[in-house]
Amino acid sequence: MHLLTLTSWFSLIWFFYCIESRTWSEPHNQQVIFNSGETYTKFESSKVEDAGVLSRWASATKSQFLAEILENKADEWIIVMGNEAGDTDSMAAAIAWAYHLSNLKRNSQKAIPLLQTVADALDLRPENQLALQKSHMGPRHRDLLTIDELPIRAFELSLHLRGIALVDHNVPTPEWHHAPILSIIDHHADRKFNLSASPRVLETSASCCSLVADLILKSEDRGEHATIPGEKSGIPSDLVNLLLRAIALDSHGLGSASSREIDHLAVFGLFKLSQWHHPSGKPRDQSREKRQVRKIMKSFQHEMSEAQLQLEALDLRDLFRRDWKTSAVQTNSSRYPYLTIGFASIPYSMATQIQRTPEKTVPEWFAIERAFTAEIGADVSVVLTQAKSAITGHSEKEIVLVVAHGWGKRLSQAAATDLFKTLCRAVQSELEGLKDWIRPDNKPLLPRRMAWRLPNEGYHINRKILMPLILNAASDWTWDPPDSISGSNKQSLYVMST
Image (tube, rainbow, N blue to C red; front, side):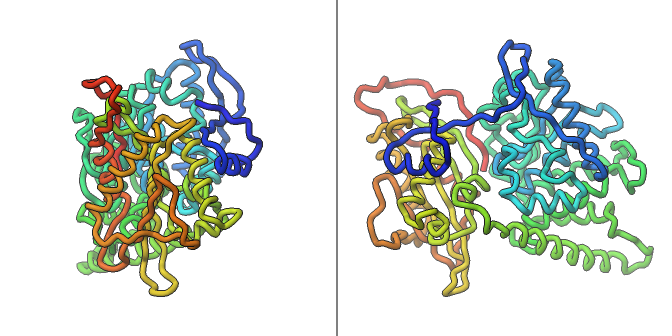
């Protein structure tokens, strides 16, 4: 990986006006030695005081995990991880499943939730902070493990773990592919990976937390959880609160078209274990409880949605980082058998994003995009925007597609151009009513850059639709230069789920 010696992020942006490159940085912390003899970074965990049941468990688990990994006991641990976008659904599902595994009366397991985001990116999701605060978790996620707090690199650690559990995605990112996958719980399209995982639950739902909650509620009904002093059940009220908030956000308070029966069943099951449930034994209890549940979920949805929109302090780079997913995808090209594709969802229009750049120009937007994607090594970046029109009041969306090449990039100009055309054809053929996005200065976009506006009425698209479309088109890409060796086998890589 090419190393830059630039002293500031703004220098990096300026650098990408002139020249292409890649950046890489590493935190400075105490170094430790793992059994392979390689040197790794050690991070210290913080003690959480005056916190809730869930927080105390998470803090103790984190401290024990970090200590035992350095004692070569990684083979005793299961890491439960959500997807790398790190939204509330992923975070809460990982916490819940890890808690469940570690608090069984019989065959309890050492399990820890992992946030696949770095510590300095945690503030980019204020809705997560609110959900944790309301669940009496420690401030600034300090009782949770983040990806940059791992004492050794994920790729190395995956060789030594007992296994991993995937929630809110069903294919691991490449650095984890050596670890046995013990369980998968997800609500995205099934990519038919690791069919032997148990449980392996892939079911359509508004929230992955609904699927996790359904499993742990059934376990609770069977009396499988250890009792907790002062709690109504083996599922602490703090965890119940966290799961309800995650489901409320993704299901719009159980009012969205994406809500399924499993979402409703999970919510009512959790409600009965919550602090708000006080049955009177009267015949009309069920009707009253339904009204109460709807009221609670709408309240949670309102609070979480408001927090989710508190993004005024974020610059453009932070908006990219806030909701970014990376996928490694196999292709049919012998020269480039795999590609790295990144997807960002940003709740602001391109016009607003451009105004958040220091110079408020389109070239600077692309310079920041280029610097960020070079930093993480993406060959292709796809940005999906969403914002309410100040004129019509309707929600409007845009898609930006960029294919990178050149110095510091793997793709040649010819390959990048061919891939760009392939992806553009896929988008334009599958999505109806697209209109070209026009730069405010009416200048054309540079090569291998394209942007579209989407119709704002009667048309639904999100990353769950756009991401498979792009990945499938990239997987079918067959570019091969005349001098390439035909018949090359694809490299064994993994495609991350949407």
